[in-house]
Image 1 (cartoon, rainbow, N blue to C red):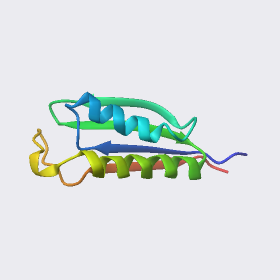
Image 2 (cartoon, helix red, strand yellow):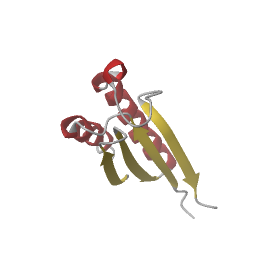
Image 3 (spheres, rainbow, N blue to C red):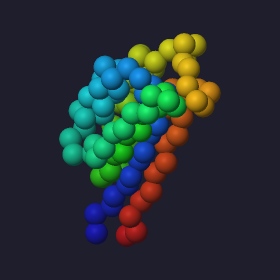
Image 4 (spheres, rainbow, N blue to C red):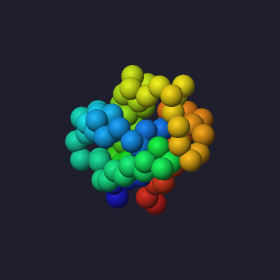
Length: 97
């Protein structure tokens, strides 16, 4: 059985659609792993859902974090929750083999 992994990175940007589009575009360079994205302006967070082959998902997540480092200035971040990092959460789960 093919191994699958899901990764749900949360990024500290939920108000600037151009920045979120750029994050998603960077992750989309890895074909077939992007499932969903959501922006939350109140919390100033975006959530992206990736799933697929573990190596491909890891590559996409790292591309997203790299792009976030370029685009997000945490010294200017404001939202309902304080910003602790560019990528605030990255949960993952695997299929059983």
